[in-house]
Amino acid sequence: MRSQTSLSMKSLQYLLATVCLLTLCTACVDEEQFDNTPQGNMEALWKIVDEHYCFLDYKQQTYGLDWQQVHEKYKVRVKGSLTQKQLFEVLCNMLSELRDGHVNLTAAHDLGRYWAWYENYPANLSDTLLRRYMGADYLIAAGLKYKILDDNIGYIRYESFNDAIGEGNLDEALMHMILCRGLIIDIRGNGGGMLTNAERLAARFCQEKTLVGYYQHKTGTGHSDFSGLEARYLEPSANIRWNKQAVVLTNRRVYSAANEFAVYMKTLPNVKLVGDHTGGGAGMPFSSSLPNGWSVRFSAVPMYDAQRQPAEFGIDPDYNIQQTDEDFAKGEDTLIEFARRLLVK
Image (cartoon, rainbow, N blue to C red; front, side, top):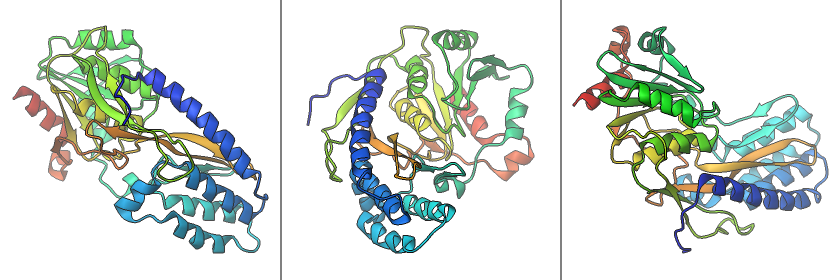
């Protein structure tokens, strides 16, 4: 195993860009060997995933994925003549075998996606209830909505890590709630976005340099060709930090960068996760293309938590709390109310 040196998110993103560029160049060379036919496009897509997707071995272990068997299953479905729409449907079905929300096939007419990671689970989130708690007097600082609840508990709603937040925004929000007894950070429904935003927010709750996880990168085309585990650390912010108790609210739709944020926060001693198991998405994705010009996006760099466990299928909260019909009828958000009691206690 390589030495566990500190790696900033900026360095990680630079490394990812370098790895993706090299991998993409390799994929382009591979793709030139295939004709622009239904059979050629299917073979190109299968090979790109076979050589560069980062979770094939892990998913074989967890649910029995056999990528070679997937090849045999779908190659018979592209024999003969297919329309472009028919081919798109077949290839999307093949990619869905990976069970990965980061995997997309993009054509001019549609975006192939895998959403089953959250579709069959309770939302544990109601816009109606959120409007009741937020009222009309909440504050907005870039991507953050925040206010002080009537029991002197601070509440921050962050809907997407695609919504930028600056250090000044965080300073203002935390200063506004500096006398609160505790703080709730609600990321339910947050499907991810920029990892730098997740790190910037998490750093406000970090009091010392903290190991938050590991990553690897592909070193070859084999399913097991990876570098050693490289450590990832969260550094405390040089600006205002929150050193009281905090609760992060999660649900099944917490994914990708939001899932990473939950991983970071779970390592911090003054933070608890409340809600549902997160959706996962622990691979950092990049894109390649098929002979017909369609674009494919998939997970290329696997990420792990501080215990070296994959977070691809999500992480458990400290308190698994579900929204109840009884609370909804009373106009109460079960997760928010539980978090308030936990912070008061």
